[in-house]
Amino acid sequence: MSRRRSVLAVLGVLVAASCGSTEQEQPQIQNLDRPIDAAIACHGNLRITGGDGAQAGDPLVFSPMPLEACRLRTLEAPPDGNPAPGQPGHVPPNWAPGQEDLPDQPELSKGSRWYIFALQSASGTVAVAETTTGVQSDGGGYNNGEINVRDGDLLVPGKNALSVGSLPVAITGDPSGCFMTTANAGSCDLSVLDVDRIISRSSDPLVRKLDVTTPDGMPLLARPAAMIADQRDAEIGVACPLEPQGLLYIAYPNCHAVAVVDAATGGVVSSIRFDAAGNATVGDGNLVCPAECGMREPIADGGRPVTLDLVRDDVSANRRLAIGLDNRPVVTVVDLDATYMPTTVEQYELEGDVGVIDVAITKVINMTGTAGWIEEPPSPLRAAQFVYAVANDGTVRVVETTTRDHECDTQVDPRYTRVVTDARDLICYQPGQVGTPPRRALARSPGIQFPGDDAPLSVVVTEAGVGKSSQYHPAPTYLVGHFALVSSSFGLTYVVNIDDDNYADTENSAYPLDSQLALAMPHQLRDALTVRSQQGPGAGTSPEEEDDDRLCNYPGPFSNGAPVGGPRAEDEPAINPAP
Image (cartoon, rainbow, N blue to C red):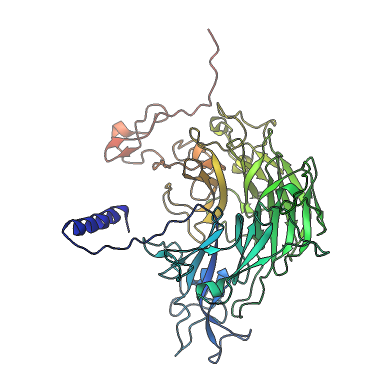
């Protein structure tokens, strides 16, 4: 529902009340209590196949399932007469193997829903919301009233959330989709939520505690600051396991370590440790941490990991964990093996005395180009993988981790890059190096800055337009490529171009308005400029609109007969000497 229609609906209620109606409509309470994290579950019709494909006698259940099951339902359904796999025009099925609709059986394609588990740290609760209209198609959205917050306890007046623990700081789902786990800073433990029991409103216990323990069985009584789960595959079409699956990565700032924890048992199986200088090494599960719950113990100085992100990139066979320290100017990237255990560590220095409060790591991206980036393996000449790190100096730092292995200067003055003809040169300028253009005026670091006094708080990276062509005219809201989304202290969300595949990568000297480096360069804020690509007048224009002198005097481009656009010049900027 649009904002205008919402206002009209409210006015209608007020008018009815003013006409003498004695009935009071109960407000639909949807607000949350300062949520700090969220995780998503997929729940719906599931065929238990036993691994032998869809059979008419297979039991049908209403159950949680891996996220991939719902993601497939968002795709376009194959048409009648769909060509065979490998043939031109083939559309892959929008269901997991064994989950297709069978004759004379309920339609599995209907009934699936997303469930959002929102973590409310101050109250120590988790609120659960559901998409009442099911799983929308790819690119579809939800209208007002189509996402409802559920009541966690129907026997208590009001709309209730689920109590999970003291000061929870993070929530994540396991690969099976059957469990959610929270990390609790107030009690130095974990809480495990049974998704199926919560959704079905079971009378059985919904939440249970789980201690994090070292290999000798001792509880780890350190306060967690962040947690993330691995992204291993889970089979679709099997019943829920008895325990959560996979590994958890939990950051303990005052233990100066990230613990790799078995989600089923809470046992620490490996670790990434930071010394006093912030240098990282891979260690075993025998962590010795100062107790922060119960009888507290002194805390030594050292690198404090407070933020984590993990990426799984099947195209490049890349699994990596990014770690940020809030008291050291360094970004840490850990390579993971096929079982998601840490193997090697790389660290990247940031300019200045800063710390990091949030990180996001991209897939390996085929930078530059305007189409087909998602279907092809990375090219060594164009491949890049970035870590976006929110620094405590009010900027977002960018580090390239594949071939360049250094921080990127996002504040180079684009006027000095107009002569660049190879877009690969723009991927990541190294600060202070020969060949790196000067910085913009008033830039305080290599990081991405934001208007006024706005400061970044968190960052995520995403890809958009998968499978779309770049044939559409460039527009601010038409996204094809890789982008970062940054939330800010002013309550805004900024879009940052990482690789915009629907816009030219370099300037065209014949048509200087066709691309603008301030819009085309990687790691720049995406603006709302609508006239993003203009080539000037073409053949058959009126004499006053001829383009023979358009660089300085051409008043176009034209819109409805009126000139639009600002002044422009082709020459590089120069400092005029004093007379």
